Amino acid sequence: MKTNYFITGDTINEIKKLPNAAIDLICTDPPYNLGKDYGNNIDWKQWHEYEKFTLEWLTESKRILRDTGSIYVFMGVKFISRLFLMFQELGFHFNGWITWHYTQGMGRIKGFSPRHEDILYFTKSDDFTFNLDDIRIPQKYFRTRNNMKGANPGDVWEFSHIHYSNPERVKHPTQKPEALIKRIILASSNINDTILDPFVGSGTTCVVANLLNRKWIGIDINPQYIKMSESRIKKERNLLDSFDPRENRKPKDLKEASINQGNLF
Image (cartoon, rainbow, N blue to C red; front, top):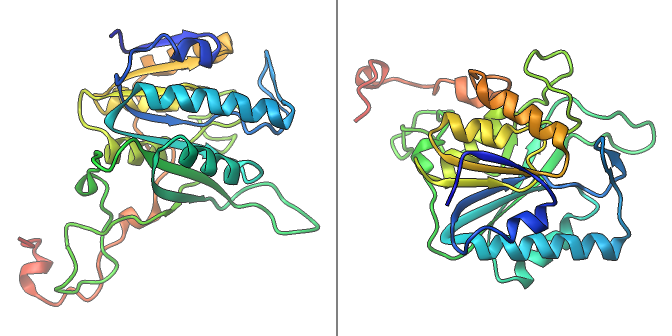
């Protein structure tokens, strides 16, 4: 199967062309059906139309995933509960409901300002890829019972938005942090695995997959976003447009000389 390329076209039509069990990881940020303007299309459907659209691409996603494959889907609060049920109805295996917390966002006068997005994490079977050692973060405290290789990052992640003044920012309304996508790819795929983003948008999933020596395919209906993604994939990137602040912490209470010297094992 051909990899490392972008496809301009309707996701459902294009994903149907991919062979069965060919993809190791799907990571995507589909339209939230909130009326957002994506240039050549407006993200707005009647509820039943949006359900049908979502069910179609999820059904195809299950078909093309390997048995050890995983799927991560970003989704807004208005539809995420229905999306969760769709995953279950299709026979996916639930593995996590991740909260992406960020410090900047839309302000509200009446009601609480939103400061997070959700990511649903499902697998095709109970036998799935998960590389915990590749995504550990430093422990907060030294205790002999802790794994000093690092802690599991948990299901609440803190990554800043890509601010409009950030030089890494491109002209896309929902650009996701590279460091966030990096965690997903490291956790749920291996070198040379194939990763698909059926709503590639600004191209972040494919950019990070390429840097981490994974194969990739990106699909989008907007040709301008495909051009944007192709441009980004050609540039050297440092994956530092955001980071989890816990990654820089050093465990406290390091009393043993061997630990202080880095001789942990």
